[in-house]
Length: 137
Image (cartoon, rainbow, N blue to C red):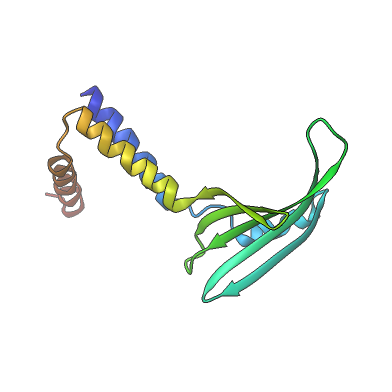
């Protein structure tokens, strides 16, 4: 039973992740009022939105200020897909929805396998219960 509770928690985490669209371009644009932020740029390419935020921050163990660019890429549904840091023309991926979702799914599948839980039966049972509650049966 404890395995099923943990598996349920993991599936809920995936559902919450899928329902969260991330920080919006409008929220990013409001950073322009924050100290150190110098520019916010939005661009639409092939129906996708790219939002770049530029700011200065102090380097660790130094007073030297470095300029940063973070690029936020959104799909047609305005859902954040990835965040990339650009510095000296080098792109460093910081976060990817695809990779994070893949990790969550892999963790669920591995946990189910290790706990000897048949996901097909579990998901089918959940679907039946959900349908019954919706129809009042």
